[in-house]
Amino acid sequence: MKCWHSFPLLVALAAGGFFVLENIINTKTYLSDPATIEEIAKKSLSLEGGEFASPGERRQAIFANITAELQLRYGDHISQNPEWVFINAGGFIGTFCVLHASLTEYILIFGTPLVSSGHSGRYWADIYDTLVQGKYKQWPEGTTEYVVHGPGDTVVHKKWEGAMVYWDEHTWMLEYARGIIPSTLGFALADSLFSTQDFYTVFKTFKVYAQLVVPELLRGQF
Image (cartoon, rainbow, N blue to C red; front, side, top):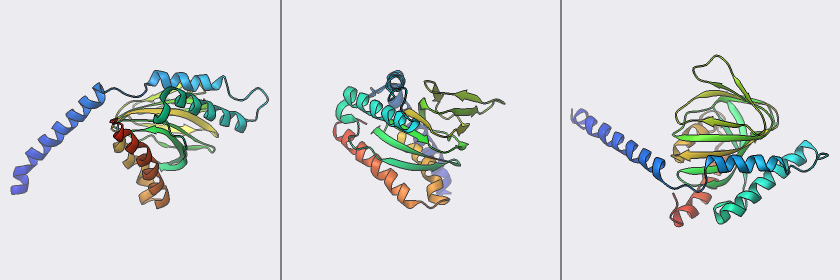
């Protein structure tokens, strides 16, 4: 009976905490913004290695241009030694390279060299993906059609929304997110924990995230 008596209090505390966090993420100052990240991604497409470069050479040139531009604008907030990490989530598998991360924001490159598809996940965050190579098909919840996106397009995945996603071979994008970033880890790691049991990827994901978040906290950035 005592547990039932405390239940309304727990609900009230949870609701209060939710609204406090919502207010924080809606009013705080961020390192970057969706428009700037989109601009950087599109700029990289004009510097992709020349007309006669192979797809792989163009891709590496795009990644290098993106990283250099971010480091020029944001200095030490951008990783100097980014690592590629597998992600197996929602039925899809890909890889990501985190360039900046805090408790409320991240910038990363995401993609896959092979065809992959699955559930997008639902997040306490707004996510913006600007394609730099390949093709991204998105079937938004509540619709009966999918939308095709190509290089230069930005796909917006709003907070709490869900979709089916499909990526062609060699699809890559610059991704920017704002919200409660730790809350996204449950979806990102669930398949690795309970399906593939890829505990190394789980460890590496936490390691890479912590290595970027801790310096931001020491700077007073969250």
